Each structure stands twice: as C-alpha cells, then as structure tokens.
Length: 421
Picture 1 (cartoon, rainbow, N blue to C red):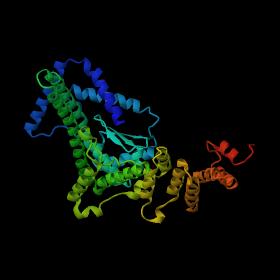
Picture 2 (cartoon, rainbow, N blue to C red):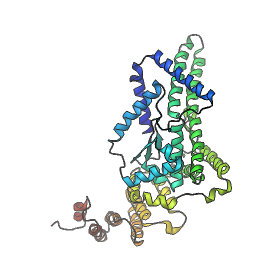
Picture 3 (cartoon, rainbow, N blue to C red):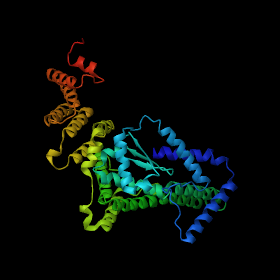
Picture 4 (cartoon, helix red, strand yellow):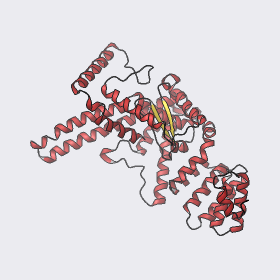
C-alpha cells in the first residue's frame, strides 16, 4: 500500500494537478514558504507540525500531495481488505494515542488492512495503514507502539514531503546532467547521475534512522519498554533465516539492496535501536510496561484468521518459526490455538508424513480443552487423506455437531458418509 500511495502520488504529480500549474507561480509560492520558515526560525518560534491542530499544507507541492492522498483515502474506505472490527480498531488506535498523546493523535486516521505481510505506513495527510501481518508478528503492546511511533515520526517530520522535494531537485539536476556528456566523457556524466540517484536513497535511509530514534523517544514518553523496537527486528531476522533455510537460499535479513536501498540493514537497525534503548532507559528498562497480556486479549478474536492468512503464504519455515516463538520456551505455551495452527500448517504443506503429523497436532489441540472447533475438521480431513476413513468420518461428524451451519457443512456431511435429509 505504501508503494501504491507513492505510485499514485508520483503519477498524479506528473499529470495533475501540479502539471497544469504555472511553474513560476509555484516557485514563487515555495520561496514565500521558505521566507516564512526563515522568519519563524529567526524569531525563535517553532514551525508548526503537521500534527498541530488546524495545520494546512504550505505550498502547491504539499497541497498536491495531500490532494492525492485524500483521493487515495476515499478509495481505501471502499476496499474489501479493510478490517472494520470496531474493537480491534479501537484498541490499535488507543495504543497509537497512548504512544504519541491524545492531542497529536487527533491529527491521524488509522486503517487496518487485512494482508499477511509485515508492514505499516503513514501518508503526509495523517493516514496511517497497519497490516494484519504486522499484528500477527507483534509479541506485545510495546512492540506495536514502537512501530506506530516510528510511522508517526515519519509523519511529523514530513518525510514524504521532503522525499518529493528531494526527488524533484535531483531530477532537475539529472536533467541538467543529461546535457553534460556533450562536454564530459560519457562515463563521467553517467557516474555523476548515479551519484545523484544514490543520494536520494541516502536521504531515505537517514529518514528511517530518524524515525527509529523517534520511536524510542515516543516509547519512553509513553512508559513502554524501549527494547521492544530492537526486538522486532531480531524476530524478523530470525523469521527470514527460517524461511531461507526451508527454501534453500540465503537469508534476506542482511541485504539492503545496495546503492539504491531505502532502509538500513535489519541487523544494523537492530543494533542501533538496542543502543538507543540502553541510553534512554538504562537499568530501568526491565521495569517498564510491555502489555503482553493486553495485546493477546485484543488480538485473540482475530488470531485464527490471521494464522489462516499466514499459512496461505506457503512459507512453511517462517510460519513454523513464528508459531514456535509465540509458544515460547514453556511447553505449556503451546495452546489449543497454536497447536491447531500447526496442524493447519502441516496439512497445507501435504508432503509425505504431513497428514499424520497434522492429525497429531489437532489431537493435541483438542486435548487442551480450549481449541478452535475447526480442529475437528482438520483432524477429519487429515485422517481421510492419510487413509483412516472411519476415524476421519467420525471426526468430521464431531465438527458438524459444533458447527452445523458451517459454510462447507454439506460437503463435509457427504464426506462423513451422512445422508442428506
């Protein structure tokens, strides 16, 4: 979605409404904004932040960017991927407002998007997107607050707007440099162009570092454990390792995309965030709030749906790692929900021995006494695929007793050998 927003804005900036504006008038308006900013700076007053009440875009470029983001938001409200559950939306927003304070939070509009990828983003007009794949991967409220604080820093520091200004400046320079090969050797001109392009992405990496530091400040102000920010990248790195091992390729966690990378390496990020947390909280970090129970309670009603989305990614190694870390080191951490999810993971892979393994996990889930009713469904289907017809049909009947109105009840009844009435 971040790419979608960027693409929409870039395309729109190319054709409307900025393409139709008078360039000279735009430049004059920007000069006026710069003069105003200099005057504020010289007066000792602080420039208004986009989170301030009543803030308005300052020049045509910012107005155009807000316009495109407002239009994208209208389309977003009609998306079938929006999670509209009021309880979940209220909880995530409450964490954001606790992290940045109610007054600054009022400038934002938060949307939950159902997609299994780990991501969040924030547009310059105050629209924040949080992916459900991110919610699945957070261990506690402090980790969620770290991500929200990071994105809010992007918003308040106006990073998107600065990127657009930077890109326009660079492209102006590139246009000029494109003439230079007439006077300079071609390699020299090409090298200059590459240097300018690279500096655009350096600018982005600096913004990410600034947002990382901002997230630590927000966590400290809100009373959260600042070590949560570093822990996120540690978890993601380990998940990438697990995915790579299963698929037989190198882990992506240390790749940064070279010259044109927009983010620091995950390992670099993890180390810097850990250092910032130590400097900010010192020995007191262990006594600060994490909100693990509160987070699990809020995500609980959605958890099985988020796991289903994750399994659909067909990332066996990463999902196995994710489930194991959610269970923790305690064998009792394998709850009925987690065991059911593990059964689903093995049944979906469907390799030799997987159906028997899946059936075992479903049985373990049922034995906990607190398990999704779908555990009986998974058990029945696994047993049928593994050649145990009678036991499989019995398990399916148990599921239908609990879920007589299931969408696939008729099909499952047929598989269970029941005669339709």
